[in-house]
Length: 452
Image 1 (spheres, rainbow, N blue to C red):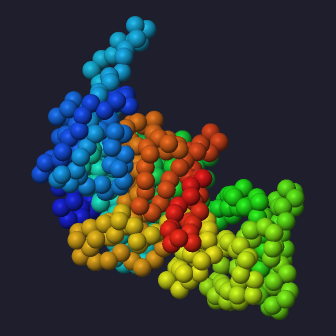
Image 2: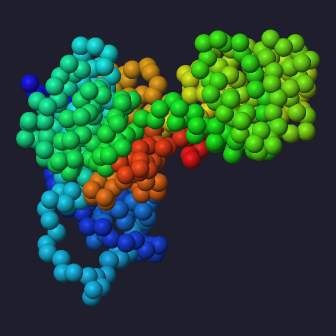
Image 3: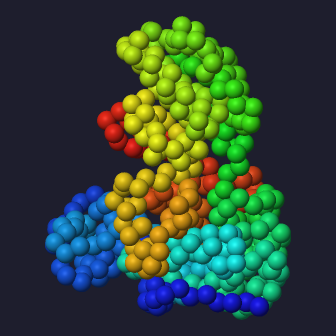
């Protein structure tokens, strides 16, 4: 049985359809506007006869997710430059009301939304983040109509697809289970709906269905990309690979990959072990070049031992220049090792960066508490923020580009709270996320995200 879920009052105000016409923006600023109480981005853009996109381009700080317009803010007001029609252009009829850029966006969510088990509870949190994104884009004049269906693991999703509201969707987020992909893939292709697969499921339909966006990247894909970026980033460094004697480690593919590429490029590296004595450990480090240290495990215990040995080495040879390169799992250890991360200029490859110290993260976590009277689950990445980032990205993309939106680099100028997205075409099929970042803990106590 299909169930339509609605959460609180976040959706109540999301059904006002707004038609926005795209226009080119000049670099010229025609004046400034001081924001008054209760003014909105949409209202200000209408006041000056410009589009929301023009106003945002003139004021880049507005690109921050969940941006709030505050009384007293000074905005730059650009000149509106309308697109010119050439004589060769065919005559256009009145723009179709069915163009998603000229009406509300119809968003469908097909995930296990229940409190029976961990899957359901995690997806409810993710869905709450989606709703927060809908509320956030409303401030940009983007109207969203949300339909959500509970599709648990034992559910036949073909029953959900019988709901007439399903075929009216412009975009569907889901599913969580691979066995629901066949029916859903055929459905979105038939009805020209974009499908966003948010998590790690097997989706061979990606190779043939151009309507699919797959966000998840496999461990092998992440490892391959990390190897390539490592060799590029640390070309002029001496690499020290430390054997941590962890028989359960699955990081051999990474260390083997960087060794193979470094040998091909004549880059220097040395091998040592956590069990090596002080003299042998010290000899692995270069005195003439900067060193980058790589462990062959991601476990916290071995990382702690490695930091102890490196700290001891720095006491003996303070002039050594040492950088650490880690694994995504290290993001879970920041409470324990944060000062060492800063001290050793640490880089961590990841597809996300949860930073509780940023204003954007603190703001979204506070709003989550206000709206849902609870905290997000203590896990990485934060699922509500994942839902927010993904929904915000696709809703803005659909509103700006319509069904031609493909999520390529540079299309939105989007500054995510936690999860950057960037897609490329997978053969002749759908689109696959290829975004990899380095989370950099700089010695001056900055945390920055380096995107590739």
